[in-house]
Length: 373
Image 1 (cartoon, one colour):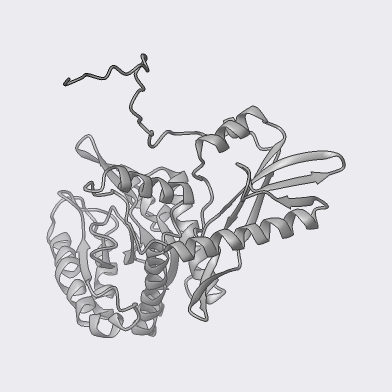
Image 2 (cartoon, rainbow, N blue to C red):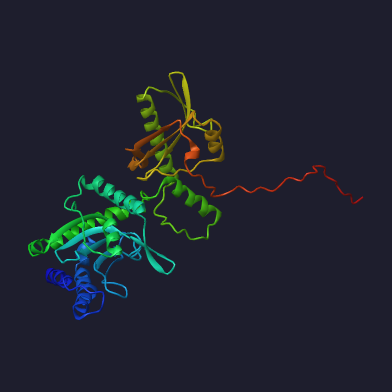
């Protein structure tokens, strides 16, 4: 495998967008030799993944039509990343000048639009890669040995999106390549990819509002296939555990900030009544196991409250709650509190995802009874 990687680096010096003899050789190495070398390692790499990911596959590309400056080979779960535009995967990149090979974890950086590949926005790529790094750091407490910056040095715009779509990378110069423990690096990268996949199955990359919206849509249209990955979802006891943990952390946060709090969740359309220095806030608490907290689901009464009493309400979002079992029951642990005191609901977007449609009552309520007598 090292020889094939080294040879691709050498051929990078002869890059051409045309199918020259050098590019034909590079294409054979990328699409046939290196992909097979990775496939040969699948039995070992499979053990780095959770057993649910039993559909690992490998593919390589040196360009669609014209040759690319930045060829790649990727390893992925077919369910989690059905094509290079979706999901995360382990990918080997090559510097345009042949100076280095990068062992990376990255995500799709393009979408099909108007019959052409278009780059995903920088903001969206930043969100995806930052989330993936958070998952890895939570598990390993460090990004090492994948803390290098990726720089392919390509002139074309598409390879630059590959850089932005890279969550973590380990750079191997051509001189380091011959001494590197490739199998160890690939195994470590595979372990981290498995952790990302598990987090996605737990829907930690989906805001709670979007998760709840999917459930509402699934009730209204049970036969419709959701474009989102459904993951494992949460059971009713797990949801209660998340809500209880969120309420506990919200109370702790507000009390530490000097508020006196009353739990009103059982009787009012808000969860807490918080008072401090003569000022009163009606507080909505939302909890989630997701790492993201940029959308929540609210009832009609909750929305009306926040709009009618704007300035005297608050939204507390508790994200990153973890679930574990205790005596056969789920309990929530951890969590990060974001407190929006004096929250302006109209500064957020609001979208109607469903309506309750009721039969209209007859205008004339009198009833005429016929008689068979």
